[in-house]
Image 1 (cartoon, helix red, strand yellow):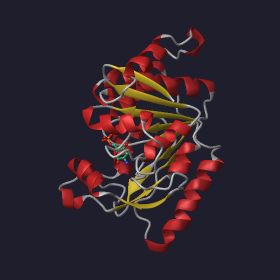
Image 2: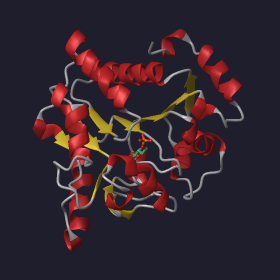
Image 3: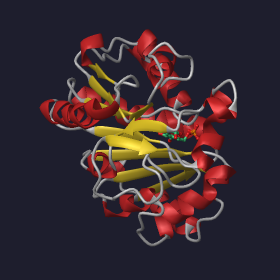
Length: 263
Ligand code: GLP
C-alpha cells in the first residue's frame, strides 16, 4: 500500500487524474472502475480538463461504477446515474455503450441474476485496470458496509444508519435516502489491477488510520486494501491526522526513485 499525503485535495486529485492519463496512454482501451460522492468531484473536473485541453481520449475506454441506490430512477437527482452524467460523462467521450452503472430499478428476485451479469461484464471487459475509490466515514468502500464479507461479490446491501445520515445532504431529507443499494463486492473491488483511494477531510481520519494501520477486519472493509498488491492512497492533511506513521509515509514518497514517479 502506498500512502501519499499532500496538503490539498486539488493536488491529490490532479495526481489521480495523471495516473488515469498514463494508463490510457499506455492502454487506450483501459477499463476504469468509478466512484461517486463528494470526494472524486475534483478528479472528474481534472479529467474533463485533460480531455478538453490535452485531448485525453476516452473513446476506447470502458467504465464500471461501484454502486447505485435501489429504487431510484436514473434521472433522480440523487442517483449515481445522474451524478455520473452531470459530473463526468456529459463532458468527455466515453461511448455510452461502454458505460456500466448498476441499475437502481432492478427488483426482488431479479437482483441476484442482475448482479451476476454485472460481474460477467466486468470479466468480459478484461477486468478493471484502475479502480477509483472514496471511503465512507465507517470505512465502507463502494457500499460495502461494516461486516461485509471481504470476499463478497456484486450484490444488494442494506445501508447503515450512519451512511444514510452521511449521504442525506444529497437528498431532499434524511428520510429520502434509500435503505438498499447494489454494490460491487469487496472481492470484486480487490480484483482491480490498481486501486486508487482518495480520502479528504477530518471526517475520514479515523477510517484512514484503520485502513492503513489497523487490523484487517470486516468491521472496517477498507482494511482489506492492506492485502492488495497495488493500492495507492491519496490522503489530504486533515484525513491523515490520525495516522501514527505519517512522517514515514511522507519520507517514502519523497525518496521514490525517479523511474517510479508518475509526476
Ligand atoms: C458513498 C459511496 C462511496 C463513497 C462514499 C463517501 O457511500 N457509495 O463510494 O466513497 O459515499 O462519500 P464522500 O466522498 O461524499 O465522502
